[in-house]
Length: 187
Image 1: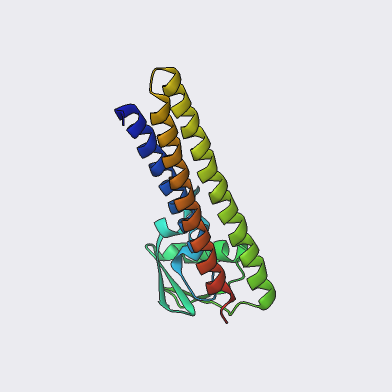
Image 2: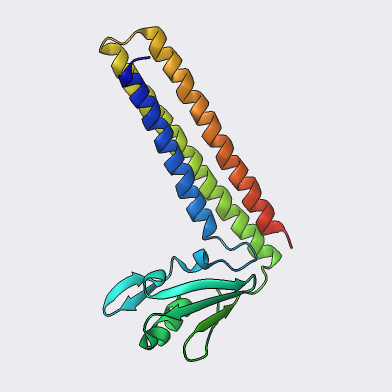
């Protein structure tokens, strides 16, 4: 197989892997009944006039499955962080003990679980669309290579490889969906 075709295939696989990695990061942020610091990563705090991600102004940890702790690098940030958590609409009530903010993660209601599963399905569908778009883009690149002199058989073989990659990464996305759905619905 020609080098230009190999580059297209490698690029396709890299792009699809990035799409799956992005999806995994998004799914980490969805609470599945147990505390995980990634839940708080979307929260922005006012750090000297600049909106800054919470994990840049404090250490986030989960000492157990029902508790999150936030230890600010500067004590004067505690009220700002508390305000940001309350305004984030995540449904958490921060508890301040002077140096550390604790959040007790309440168990999910059945209704909330269904909403989260729906959200996970939407994220997974976006991931599938991203993988299919990568397939389309790379198939177009292969067709251009064919116009520029690459043999038709080589291009057809490469297109079949791109389809195999697409199937592989769509399956990974489906597996992530199944795992996360099971995790959320488990009481």
